[in-house]
Length: 233
Ligand SMILES: *Cc1c(COP(=O)(O)O)cnc(C)c1O
Image (cartoon, rainbow, N blue to C red):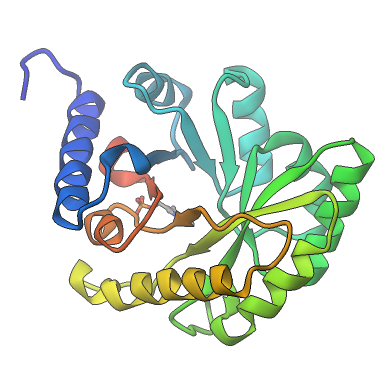
């Protein structure tokens, strides 16, 4: 590591290296993997530092927290919503975010569509899939995912871009691999269905503890908080 680099700079350099290796291992192009900085609870100064290191996508979990940051830090960045979204926040979410990763039910999709229509926008969305089948996690059950994609594809002001998942938590990142494979297989099945009006280019998967494995299995956006910014309070 180069001397004089800040902590965040070093962290991001290390992540880029890991991604490059993981991509090479599976014959993928590093350029096809984007790093999202997950900024929940992170102060503006550290976010600015990550921006200076070339991070251009930020992920937020809460509408209220995101609103303040987006208003102060501006729109040269992409801001993505990755947290559970209540339908009554759809109006704000559509105004604030460039993409919503957490669409997991038709009711929410319809509300987002209505609000996007109201502001003459097309909202990019990912369908969040609960690949682990955990009760406590958001996400559409895997066996209902294709039906949801089909239903959302009919909403004029939403544009489905791909899928997102958050696997169960494991000590070993290797244990998360089957869930990333599940999401990729599901994506391929959806592509085979040739559903009109959707894209399936985005696989949002992999976090601090397992993004290397996720990249090996096809992630195009990794969502990284602690490995960039340090532990959250
Ligand atoms: C917090 C969060 C992340 C980032 O988690 P880290 O372990 O800090 O990398 C990624 N995705 C979602 C949905 C999150 O809520």
